[in-house]
Image 1: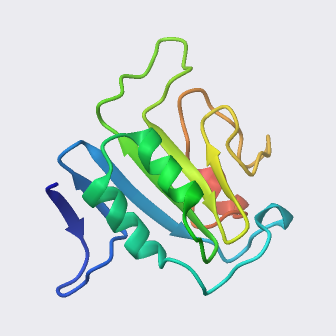
Image 2: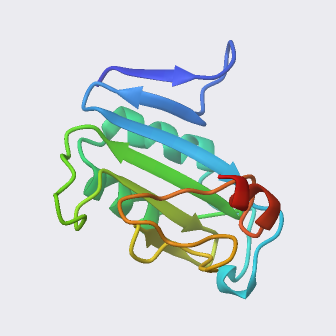
Image 3: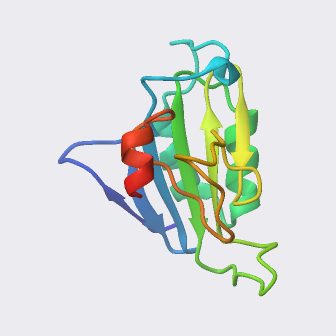
Length: 145
């Protein structure tokens, strides 16, 4: 499958990109995790290779979510996958982007209905929107977003 890997010359992993099936990927590092993250590990598939696999092999959002949940995960990240083939429903039940709270211990899929961390003051849930700033708990950045 054809895909665009946005990175550096000689870079074989991915941190952002898009494939011919209209899947796009993103990532944010997490330096300030809360207790929901569990443990990290350096044993497993490097996340840049996992994201490249999404671009190279996956055809739809559900396939990429399954890949991430079933992989041997490593460090704390917020990963994102968008599927340009999905049309948002009028009632907001279906959105074309999911984020994943990704660590060795967890791979929690987030939508606009269950986005974490949930805080009404600095990270409130908004219909048909998923957003993360520069980290997991970063009120100053999240309020601006």
